[in-house]
Length: 120
Image 1 (cartoon, helix red, strand yellow):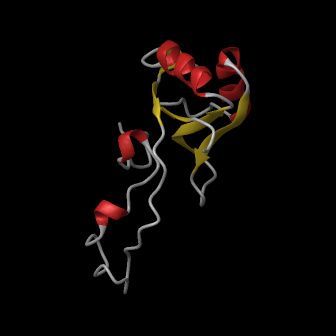
Image 2 (cartoon, helix red, strand yellow; image 1 turned 45 degrees about the vertical axis):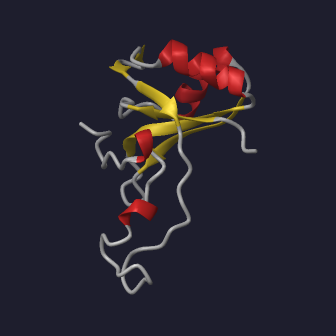
Image 3 (cartoon, rainbow, N blue to C red; image 1 turned 90 degrees about the horizontal axis):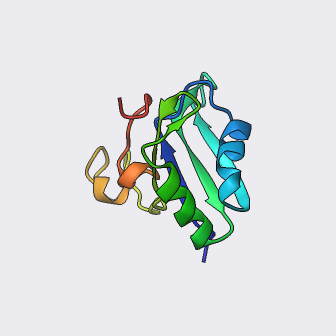
């Protein structure tokens, strides 16, 4: 089973991987802390993920940090959901376009794509 991963939404544009790691490290051992960036501009997309080494550490962070101010913004913290391996897109067996959207869930807040601005 994969280590527990949290979705962190509403991050400030200036929040870095290191800032995210530092802010959540008081809750336990962090395996990974990533601020998701736009692949074209390399600018933060306003959300990220923190992976802890245990469920209890992740739960403590979720309970303490959800709806709290972090790096100048009130953040949302939730358990991350894994992306499905579903297809979709042009010329797929699911008809392309948005036809297979139930299988194209992004790994974001409650499995819904919040867009490039953190859902605001």
